[in-house]
Length: 440
Image (cartoon, rainbow, N blue to C red; front, side, top):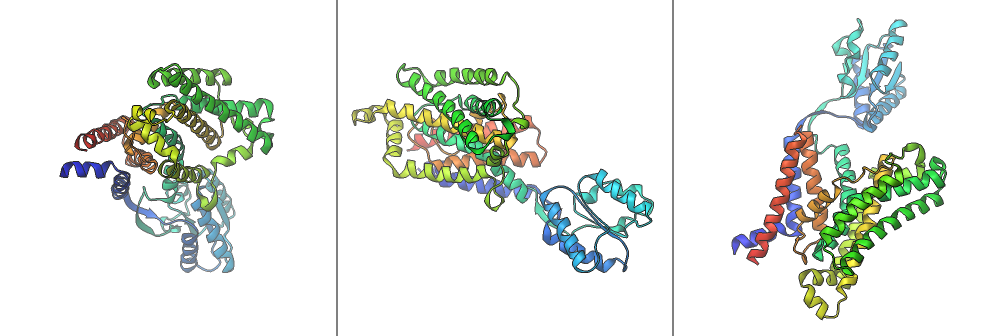
């Protein structure tokens, strides 16, 4: 009984979040190393240090890379120097060739800088070594601190942004699996929605010059197509009584083929994507990507729907005991059709967000997404036998998959080993589900 209780806690939604926190802690420890501080505060500190160590009137330059934090660093350093009546001889936020052009000009004018304020990234460039007047002590880098690569803000935002699309599709997949079905078509439906929307923008809305109403119309068409694909799955399942595995496998092939035909097997490039469409996948309030905000709102709504409404209770009843649910007067086939339509709609939404983020539509989008999404749902504690599962558990499961993959990338683990690890995680999740049922 004690073992059963432990398995139940691990398989619960709260247990999944505990596992997620443990994984984040482990990868934080494994990626811990000394890092150069960057950003606006680091730029101000570096500029103050440069004034103290540089003789009066000697030229100063600021050289940084192109990342947002490097740009903040360079701007803050420039402002501080100008406020102290020591404007820099040059400011570069770019690549090594940009730095070389500036230094060549200053060297030719016999004004080679006594101090070069750099970030941790630009400080590693070898371009400085080609100048005879350069000394290693001329480089002034921000102080270093011990910090994990995993917990860098850019990395965490990247993980959240990449997870958002899988997680949004996983909402529909959770509903499908709760009613004892499966949907293998979500990746192909995603691609179909992507190319339908972008082709319509290119051919009928003026491409990059499309206005907001036209963009909304194109998005509505893409979502209508994806919802229709999901509804067709539901009709074949409920009316024709075909197994969901076969139905959605067929739709996976048909939707992928349709996406290839619509796009002529070509990617629809950025010259056909208007700025207003691209903004959907860009950063929103507080610098957090818009897909992440949408994911948060969607999961809050889905959690309420499944935990607090009749609709949610009906889905759990159908998955727990379909015969009993039918005897209670629940129209089980209607609800099954509905959840497949929802799954198609959310797959289409994922396609629009992916096209917006990558600034293109492509029939290759979504390949293997169905496996990633199913893995997130199962790892999140939803039973493949139906009747059990929580939306917040699915959200945690999606992040568990993303954190494992991201952590292994940061550690330099090759893709083959990553697949072995992720496969083992999925098998472990299914084993825990089986043990939980055995000990109930």
